[in-house]
Length: 339
Image (cartoon, rainbow, N blue to C red):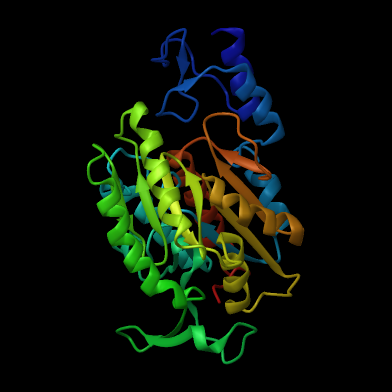
């Protein structure tokens, strides 16, 4: 094994396999047992600043003991791999089982840029709370009183009669979003490879299949449309331009809303864990850093600017982490009862 590969294993806290067990060649090693990891000195250094949540698990869980763990998860790139067709970002059955197990141990919410209904269609778990449109469409537990505007909250019931609250702080923008959806489809229909996704309170313009020379046309059309809609703004994700209402609301605000809904807004007995892979997840990471409790964990296979404290290499490592956390939760169920 080369020196660089050895450093990578050391940084991730893993023991290298013997030569007979390893299928990797000089260019790659399988750090998580399945996916190839390019040996990169910058990534090795970055891992020392953002150590693996898997190899740091015991240290992390020791800090969480005696507190209520709450798990927050992004979807794309976290629970499912990034795929060329956004409509086929399916999570594996193994990942679904891991999320199901974690939700049986701890309150669990998925916060995504996609519409809430679309994320639910992908996940298909009723024991999980969902927050779509970057937190602008959140379903959470019902509280008689909270600090948020009542006119944006609606009571709802599931098939078993359990009560929930649907909170939509961007409700007033919905007619304009529908109008812009039609407009941006018309503006980009002659650009090959563009896919416009309706995420209810947000619009996503995907350009993963667009030629490089055509990207400028897409951005120009989006900005031209936004010039006529000053109440909206443009953000960027992985091969996507997102059109969002200009309100003070993001994934970090959704995290705070859900913590209050769970009854832990000002509690020192809560331990939130947030796992995400995109720039939009940094808002949630910042909230945890500002609160000084819990752990923000970034999913990345390359060095990234982030305020996250820990890292996971890929969705497959997210699955391993959730499985390990739920196993710990089941073993310590007497002190980690779900709310």
